[in-house]
Image (cartoon, rainbow, N blue to C red; front, side, top):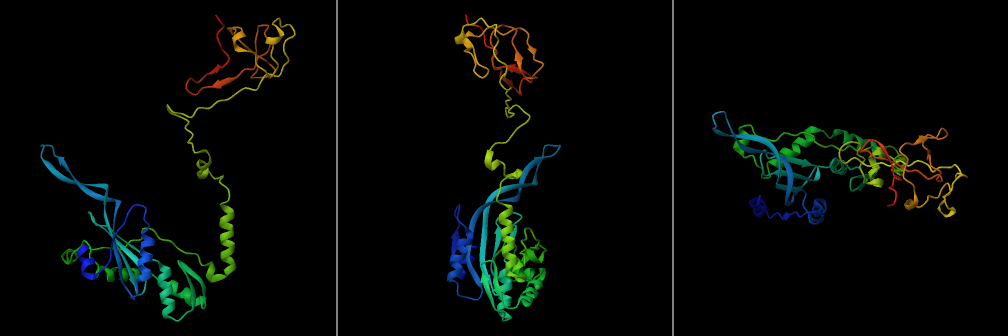
Amino acid sequence: MHRFARDHGVPWVDFVKGQRKDDVMHEHLDRFTGAEGVLFVGRAQEKTTLFRTEKRRDANGDSYPWIVKASGLVNQFYFYCVDADFGPFFVKFCSYFPYNAKLCLNGHEWAKRQAAKAGIGFTALDNGFAAVDDVAALQAICHRLGPPHIDALLRKWLARLPHPFSPADRAAGYRYELSILPAEFSLTQMLDRPVSGRVFFEQVIRDNLDIGRPDQVSLVFDRRMRRRGPRATASTACTPPCSSPPSTTDSSPPALRSSPTTQAHPHFAKPPAPTTQLSKTSPVQQVSPHNSPQRTKKTNLTRKSGFARSSQASRAPF
């Protein structure tokens, strides 16, 4: 790789963490004046799937190598190029076995160059067309792009660029074959009517104004609810306050009496009765058998113990 860059006078770029490769490509593309060629060679360390060898032993204890699938941080070499038919593209080679490669191109750039060769006027965007004189002719150009064109691009530049497979390897049958990993397809509202594009974008914005979808709830709460396990999310349920008036036979001082919504001081509370009785009027209201005024009862539902305990079960003062 270094020898190719030195012999052909191609710039060498070592990518750093957080650097956008596309921005570096546009900087070199603005200074490029040829019809086609290599813009620069880039190197980056990236994590990828690869195969390693490990030592294993058979039943007799003898060791032997074994190939296993793993992941590793290895050097990746990028060749950013310009083709006369496809425009800007890049090829990436992995420096570790099995020497994977990736070809990335933009079909819009191919369509722009084919339209320019056919004499069709158009207004270009970075990734598409803003306007075109002959819609039917441009649509026919887009329909022509297929696997033979992409394979021809790959073979053309593999013959020019250095890569892991030598001529002897290729003669023995080791060569790259194309397969589509990710593919992005553009909609053609622009070729229909400009108003269709505006309607499409307005509908996209309208559908994404709210965050009420399940996959967006974490943006608000930022907490995962766990229902099982030793670290289950705690939940608390409180009973409503008692609404009945205080007892008229209460012999305690007026200062210690509590209103239906005001709780008496816990240090003067009497010990809890050994048994309690649920009122018939409310399934959650507790009635004390003593002559003390009614007190607000708060019940905590504890997930670990599995039963309800009263938070007001304080001991009597000594």
